[in-house]
Image (cartoon, rainbow, N blue to C red; front, side, top):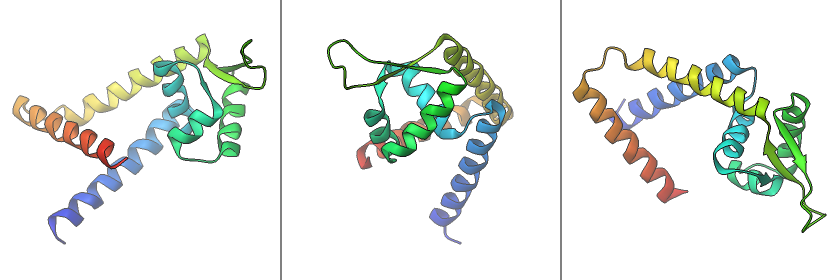
Length: 139
């Protein structure tokens, strides 16, 4: 196996396990967590904006939001300036869940990097920063 294939396989395996494990820790799907993260960091959004960010159908977003609303993690509001639009906002309970989720993710991350030297951490940070830039260029 060449280096690119080996790296691709390692990343795919790692991300799959991380996403599934992260979601299981939080009793939410990865998509539900992403919606909470969007609302918690970027503010109120409508379903169309979320569908575009997640690159999924509007009906899929509606289904995800219904589940989040049922758990009282998000609220739907209708703005006075456009009565046809429904805006989503994260609730206090949703922010608590997001903060709890972030704390758990930090614990997992700390377990992963515990044996890395400062030089290895610096290199890993640089690599992930490049991943981030390359992903945005190709997005």
